[in-house]
Length: 434
Ligand code: DLL
Image: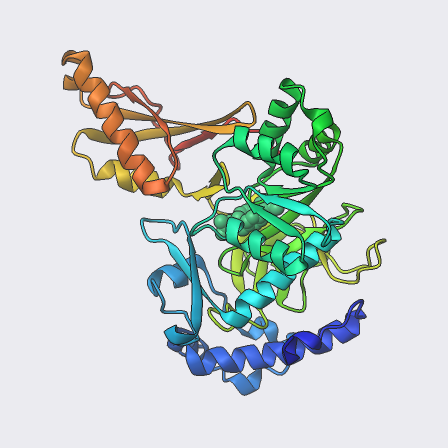
């Protein structure tokens, strides 16, 4: 274990935590100022130097960082460590075609794994457990992030990834899996398949660690009831790290933030001013120990509230409430982040489509379905039906290429879709989140 890691003690008091956070914040600000031109310029533009930040009380002097900063410096412009120190890259959707790219040094990966291991411990898992990771492996942080955390804990990881429910259930039974990590909607689908097949008595799952998409307390209880296990809520975002930034304990009274690595704030998305405890606002994080791509006051756009009173479990870290939505238009579909603007950009590339479309989202058998209705020129409806089918398939392919998810496209005649008089509405989301 390296030195910086050992500084965090178990069960620190709030004061001890503030001292540690202040020390790390000072160091992190100094580090980005000297290693990232974008931050140096941003700080200079408001007349700030690293010496002006002496602790967490100075945090609100620092400018915010947003997804746009990542997009404008695509791909590696916000990296603070040289490429020779970066051992892994992940990426998630940007608002337009460009992905948001993040890089990790070896120490970042160690800290990330440790954060996930802590979260798994909160969920009651340990080295005697066999944990199936059914988040997607790849550029998405879910699969590999969870995987390294399970290994670091000393438990046995089964790297299932997504996509083959039958095989997942067979292995769950054959290997005697006791833990599972996947999106909550996928777990509900798995649960229903297990029950339909009469397999419930053949599974040994004790704990599920679900996140990566909005879900409700009702869904969490449904999963617990169906599978007879403890179901936990894990939060994270690729820009800050990936899964493991926060997780709920056995009391399910909010998600404990790994505060020694990620300094939280809640701000008003309108005024951008910090707001008080227990009030709903936008979550902002400053990384405290990151080397690859440290982020200062990163606006997550996730809406929640924070409390700093101790939890009945004994942990003293700040907790965030279950998420209430986002302050931007990002959708999370089957665990994948999608901006409507990505679909729009893909449609505008095609000469056959008109600039009128509607994205209709629903949840069928606990899985998100996406239909994109697009207006196309009149002539396609007088042509042979085969031409219409060909065009439909082509548009489905173009959208899949853009967002990485299969969608159903329905072509409609000009002027079929509602025209809005105000801000145009391009998404109808029938899923229920409360
Ligand atoms: O979703 C990281 C992750 C993977 C978290 C596996 C948990 C489990 P991104 O793809 O960058 O990273 O998406 C981040 O997903 O800003 C939230 O809007 C949403 N999100 C993540 N966890 C939760 C959760 C991963 N537990 C975005 N509840 C975040 C609600 C969540 N929303």
